[in-house]
Every structure is written in C-alpha cells, then in structure tokens.
Length: 214
Image 1 (cartoon, rainbow, N blue to C red):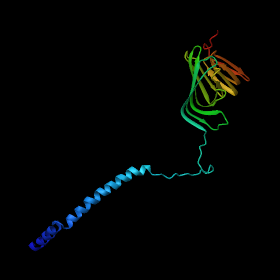
Image 2 (cartoon, helix red, strand yellow):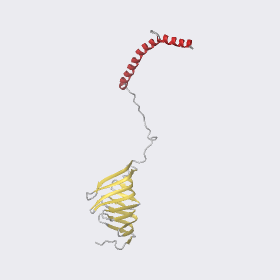
Image 3 (cartoon, one colour):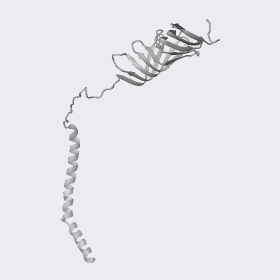
Image 4 (cartoon, rainbow, N blue to C red):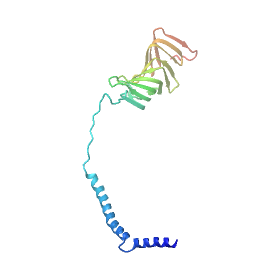
C-alpha cells in the first residue's frame, strides 16, 4: 500500500515540477484564451455589418388560402345622423360583409339607439342585414322597439330606416303595440309620431282601455 502511494506521489511531483507538463499547459492557456476571447468579440462587432442575403418568393393565388368574408368585425358600431340631425348608433356583436360588390353587412345581436323628439329609444333584434348605402336594417325575425316613455312595438318581417326613423314591411307582417296586436300584408310605421298604417288583409285585436285617443 505504501509503495503504491509513493508512486502516485512521485507522478504528481513530476507533473508539477517547474518546466513540467503543468507549466507548459498554463503557458499555452495564457496565450490561447485571450486570443479566443478577442476573436469572439471581433466576430460580434463585425457580424451586424456584414451583408445579408435576401429571400424572395412567389405566391400562387390558386393555392393560397383566402378568407370567405371581405370584412368581419366583432363588437362593431356604426354612428350617423337622422334626417333631423339627431345622432343614432347601430351596434352588433358581429358584423360580416360577404363581398365588396354587395354593400350589405350581416349583423348578429344588433341594437340601434335613436333620439326621438320625446326622448331616447332602443331597437333590438337577434339578426339583421344593414344596407350601407340606404342606412336601413332588414330584420331577420322579431324586432323589439322600446321608447323612454314606455311605448313598445314588436314586429316581424320588417325593416328599419334609421335616418327616417320608420318601420316598413312587406310579405305578411305581424306585431304588437300597446293598443293590441296586428297582422297585414304591408305595414308602415313612424316611430317618432307613433303611427302605424296597415295595408292588405289587415287584422288588429284591440285591448280595451289601452287605446289612447288624441
């Protein structure tokens, strides 16, 4: 055991003697390491200034995926002025325009806010189609109208002219007002004046005491 320890000690002493392998390794690293650090630093400084290659490519319009909708907006809002200069707004949970050639926007969960002579009013519907040029909303399903003084109108198969603040419908419209319910082939109503005109096979069921005479 002692002889083995002596041999190991002798080897270590020979490795560490002046001018031995350890000294040579230290001298080599003292030169190589600073040179390596300098080379890395020079590379970092010069690399950003070196020219870079540009990549160009062509897209095949027949193979690139395209969106079906020209315009799709979530939580959309449109603002405008009616014929009396009063502001109105039309908001929608989602607005989709299918084609640039057709100025119609599909709306869902729409709400229109109007300023009538007697105060604010709200129109709401589950879905509709907004004409950009005409500023009219064709309602799909039931339309709900509520004025600030409690006046209510429900109507199906109608469209709303936001500038004129009128309702109109063709093709068997139906609805309800405080005075009763109605059905007709055609309907014209003024939201501001609270008048309803029914044409063609008109039917109306009155609620006693609800009709207010001027």
